Image 1 (spheres, rainbow, N blue to C red):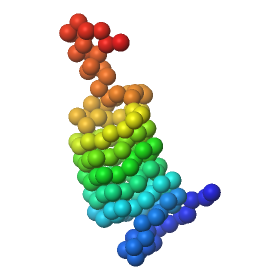
Image 2 (image 1 turned 180 degrees about the vertical axis):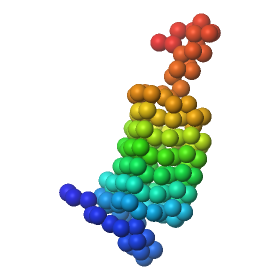
Image 3 (image 1 turned 135 degrees about the horizontal axis):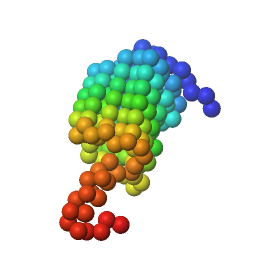
Length: 161
């Protein structure tokens, strides 16, 4: 099943008319910054080169793919991000509060200054990520703070594994 190619203007017009189901859309090279898209359903959608800075996303299903997207200072709250994929995205200063993060993937993503409060059954996947505190974590990991935990347990004489 192909994705429906859509423009930002069309999405915003349909959203303003009350539509919330935007599953399997394809949105490229668009500006949705400072928008209000509460309750939107983006399951299976793909966003490429979309400016989502300072956007307000509450009570949404964002199980989608985001490629080269700007989420700086975005508010993402009470949302489903299960199996969402972020590739080469900027999430600096974003707030991800009360989000479902099961199997969410972050690849070459900047999370500096991000405030996250989420849960999930399976861990997130991280590849070449800048953590909330600005530290770059190269390669793949399920735990952005594993190096610190290992170092701390060695100083205490604990066995990590």
